[in-house]
Length: 254
Length: 217
Image (cartoon, rainbow over all chains, first blue to last red; front, side, top):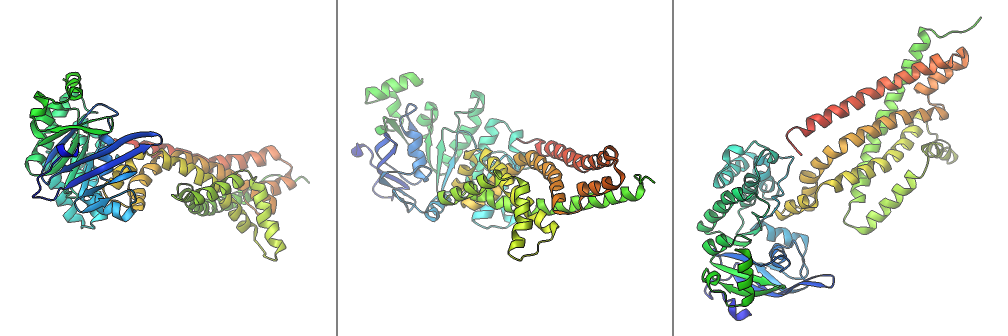
């Protein structure tokens, strides 16, 4: 499998998973997952539910522990043992956006965005305000700074969640099915923000059901099945899948 | 010549009511602080600390407040420690409240969705920062009604302090009734005073719930 997952040898990968294994009790959900993501690359992970794609993503920023293998992220090593301090250092470089937004409901949009920079990076109030304005402008929501999350639509909330992650100036962004909880007519605004991020050179790994997005925006797409990387390829993979499993998966998705 | 209820007796009841308030305030401040520590221990990462806190809560919740009061008042006296009735009452109410408030607040902390802590920790906040900035404010909102409810209960529980001779509202009424023998009148007035003290708390709780809910979850 590893032969199919070659990153260019010139640049050190931003993210590298090597033979990652993860079990919940007797159930092995990742059975030796390996792939590299180059800096500035956009990678989509597709696959049926239960294929391990979200778990793989969550392992990258230490939300899930791994039982074997290793993960290198921007110079941070994630092994089977990790300390809280190491995790926090890692998470300063890796942002994640969740399916259910997980905004802080008791804080305004601006406070949601500035909380981590103020607490973790200890930047001042004025600088935090400027940062929030810049990040919210990036997702097209500068005018919503004083709203509470509940007053926003799902698409807007998800864009705030992206801005909240961007405020920490991560080197890698993880997206965990970020449009799956949205009404179909709201997915477009979120995907457009992600496309813009990709064009601006952000390293992105996105677990998604949006095949159109994967084909159009991702440099490479990883198809996962049964806790394994089953097939990897560019946009051409969607037209000409090599494995019958991907073919039938794409047939069921489209 | 019969002794009958008059305004000076009423003044004495007011004096008792004042001490009821003082004792309640002491008990709530001390019990709240201790309850906060119990809540922290009950939600701690260390299993051992959680277990110790649980044993404490089980023991205190299973002990009548009156027994705690007797231990504080008579028990410490055995060791030659002279405890004034106010102090004994405040200590026993504090211990009682710490177990109940700790358990109420633990439930409120756990009622905040787990994903909130996850989101905060994914932004590189420490566990404590996530707790203070994200979990606690949301838990406090959930905690307001049951906490005020407990305050009302505690204010009425201060009447137990009368048995160790502390002159609060109930003890004052008892003293007056001993001379006037007008129990319906005297205890009726005392009961009304308790209501007057408790009602604003309940009303306050209701208004807090309304304001805290505006535009938010």
